Length: 305
Image 1 (cartoon, rainbow, N blue to C red):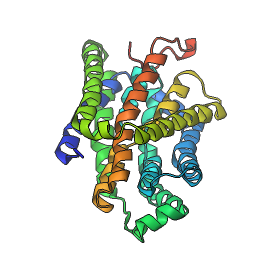
Image 2 (tube, rainbow, N blue to C red):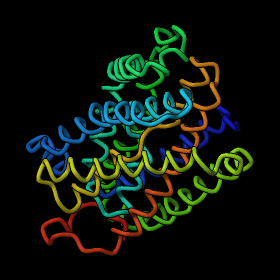
Image 3 (cartoon, one colour):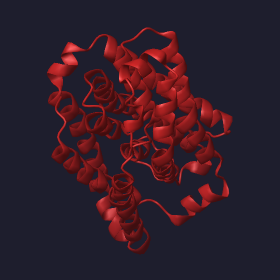
Image 4 (cartoon, rainbow, N blue to C red):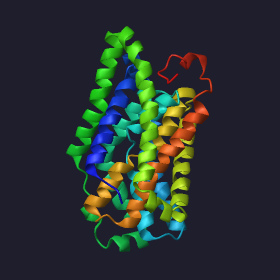
């Protein structure tokens, strides 16, 4: 599998630039509004951090898959949201402030919940537990790496973008179209690079693995919609919640698989397919929502026009 830490760093820098461009349109009042009405964040965390991992366990107990594939599904389900979801929310004309808040909170919660969720769910799956053969205790989160990623890939670009947008709005308006074009181009490059870099691997496993990953991701999309409805969210908030819950940091999962599970091939396949497919499904959601009108009261939210 083509997994190179240097490539990951380059993609991280590109993503930071994309977050900066998205943040040019953000205002403090949008984050203040989330603090006053935290229901969508709380509902999103409930769906993403608790319901999805345990619902995935229930499915793995019902179907007969290779234990490595089931472990891969469980690990990805336990992973937090990724920063690319913020850009996708922007392109889909969703609430970017809500998306970024959910990404940051789920990443922080993952320091504790990811090991707990994965250890418990995998131990309750008899075949998966036997397959790991006592290696459950080996799963450890690199807190420093996650915190550094949050600061440099989300916090710093967000802060700089908001500073420019709020202190120099005319300058921000001039450069914003360029960053929007850059975001679209970079996203296309992400998808092409992800597929091309592992084309042979994907071509050999386009059957069962892709099928279960697509169904798993679709279930996350449906869960995002249900949680939004449960929290009585519509419009831009609903779009943000659906995208956030359905786009997980599979790169983190892949890193854990190589670092702590010896690069177990079936687990790695699931994480790699997830990392590619959720960009495709995200793009489909963007195409579905991009030209659909928002309620009049939400037209002032950050959006990609």
